[in-house]
Length: 173
Image (cartoon, rainbow, N blue to C red):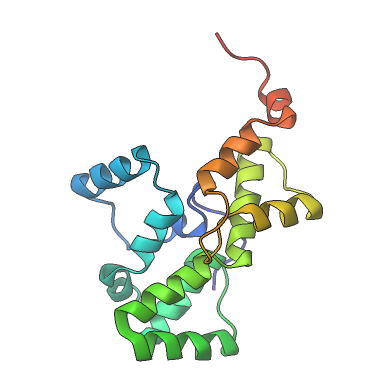
């Protein structure tokens, strides 16, 4: 299993430190940059990567390997036996659609959203959020229901705080 909730960028979440075991091609980078420039939430790009056939094959190409790697890359721990059983049912019975549904469920889970909030606070404020701040931000972030703020908005909001300004000072022109 993994350890800790670190890795990746504050926007991308835990899976930024995982991935498909290779660097992106220039065409893939160009496409991702175009998506980000157009306002796509980085979480959507993360979901696309994690639900891809290439990621599935890179994990070992079996439903069990996929489930274990997905949990480790996104949540930084192995799935529980109950999570494995539920995930295997989803992936095994619904194929590519089931794989996408599982990825969305894990990436949009409260635990994964808490990791993104922790990363944002730690990266920008050099601290972690209080329990109250964590609960507020986790509930504000987009969930599988599709409502909520994007990871980019989370980072923008943290960067707009007095705490951030006091940390970095007035380094403007």
